[in-house]
Length: 107
Image (tube, rainbow, N blue to C red; front, side, top):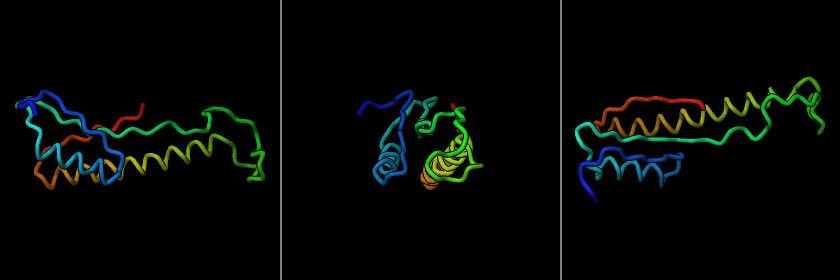
């Protein structure tokens, strides 16, 4: 493996395998003094079309709940999942005395 890398990206999805990959990178990757290890977690956008409001739910759901409410609930759930995954990754870093900065972003 090349030494003194400038940047290494490790994608985590909450699986044991991705957290093992993070552990491996922390144990084995050699960065330049100004190098960066980036931990990334990406989620797909909600599958319900945002901004569409067809009125009442057509499949027997409550008539006062509209599609944007479902989208908001899905997004909130995805945020909780992301927070849990990133918190786990940060704990792995902290356990190895690796300094980290959490820059969670929504695009």
